[in-house]
Image 1: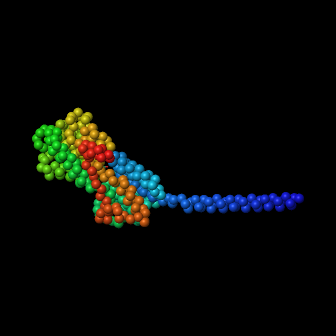
Image 2: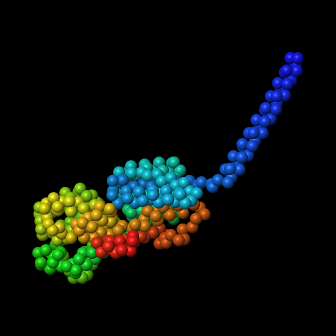
Image 3: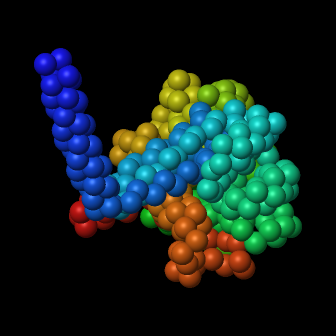
Amino acid sequence: MNRRIKSCCSQLLHKACCCFLIMVCFLFLGSGCHSSNAPAVKTVRIGLAMYSQNDTFISAVVQEMEQLAREKESVSDLKINLNLADGQSNQTVQLEQIDRFLDSGCDVLCVNIVDRTAAAVLIDKAASRDIPVIFFNRQPVQEDLQRWEKVYYVGPKGEESGIYQGEIILEAWRKDQPDIDKNGDGTIQYVMLEGEPGHQDAMLRSEYAIKPLLKANILLEKLDSDTANWSRSQAAAKMKQWCEMFGEKIEVVIANNDDMALGAIDAMKEAGIAPLPAVVGVDATEPAIEALRKKELLGTVQNAPEMPGVLLELALRLSDPESSLEKMQIEEGHYIWLPYYKITRETLIQQEIEGF
Ligand code: GAL
Ligand code: CA
């Protein structure tokens, strides 16, 4: 009897085991089928190093890149890991961040370098791991870019923005000279707020902004110029001094970027200067467009609005061995030049009419 129960039990156990094994096989096969049908997700790891997260224009560029990356993910099989690092305006800090990106195995680097004369070390580090580098907005010197073939620069040509600023002032002068020439002496008395010393955009904008006026034989008197490091508060402090020194004599304020133009407007309003002189900036940031609508700013220049899209596109192509760079319009093997756009109240109205 006992033996019969035992053998019956062992038969049942055997059957149960068989059933279990069959079920496991089905589950395994089922899941195998499922995974072979699912789209293969490829992860691209982009290390993005900013010179400073506090910079209004740079943080807008990076935000747009993040947005575009999410859009790209939603229409492709890609997972885009955009890892950000804030260099805090310190090249040593930024180099450590680059080391970390390289150690963690990123596919491509996008670098807004702190010190544009110090790109060689960074390029050599990336080249030793065969990780392509895309510099943007802060342009390394040419010899450094030529150190390795997988190094690129994406950005606009600074001189173009300076010329557009000069043209905006010239157009306003031609349209209504007394409006600009407050003291009626036929000369433009101006002050210039410069960006960070050594930055290609600061140097080129300062040099080129007056060229269209000189070319049109307009007399210019530079009251003063100084750096305010792209900063609204530094520009306001500088402008406060100039208001005390020159007061109503200032007819035009040329600022290398919008934050400084807005800082100058803050200080002039504070000093009770009315009407405000003609103020021009660069970047077309949201607060600057607001100031343009309020007629506090005469004009600005949109700073390479295509940059976030081009950076992302190039980064994705460089991290895909099957992709080609043919359509990327790379000049001299390393440069992708992007346009600036002149923005005045007239162009804004025009854009609104055209439904932008
Ligand atoms: C310039 C821009 C400035 C600042 C700077 C940072 O092109 O006009 O506002 O963002 O780049 O490198
Ligand atoms: Ca004058």
